Figure 1 (cartoon, rainbow, N blue to C red):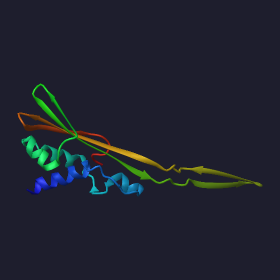
Figure 2 (figure 1 turned 60 degrees about the horizontal axis):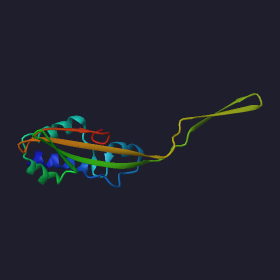
Figure 3 (figure 1 turned 90 degrees about the horizontal axis):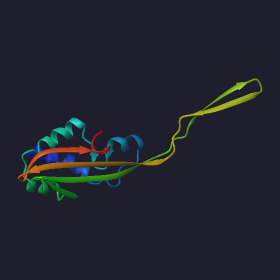
Figure 4 (figure 1 turned 90 degrees about the vertical axis):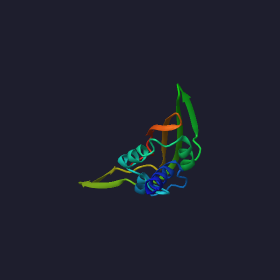
Length: 143
């Protein structure tokens, strides 16, 4: 039961759409609004734990998939999440060197403000209504 709840937490955090993700630059890269994203090893382990589940169990735990595909007796259930994190700008550092009567100022670093878009797609493969494989892709699945 704990393993199922842990799995639901990880996948729910990833697939929730993560609306309102925190705006802090560093935190925004490693956390969603629901908490820390799983590591690759954690997500791999949780997805592996779904092998043997029925399609019905999967939908009961995660809700209906965004898309399904049926190919040669295999069903693919696709769950997707897209969310944005606002990245604040950062002023450059300035260095001034005086040579004789002339001052030379140079700037280094800095960053313009922008938005980073994260995506995650998790696809479960099923044969005879049993999950046989699960994989994911995107820059928003793990950290």
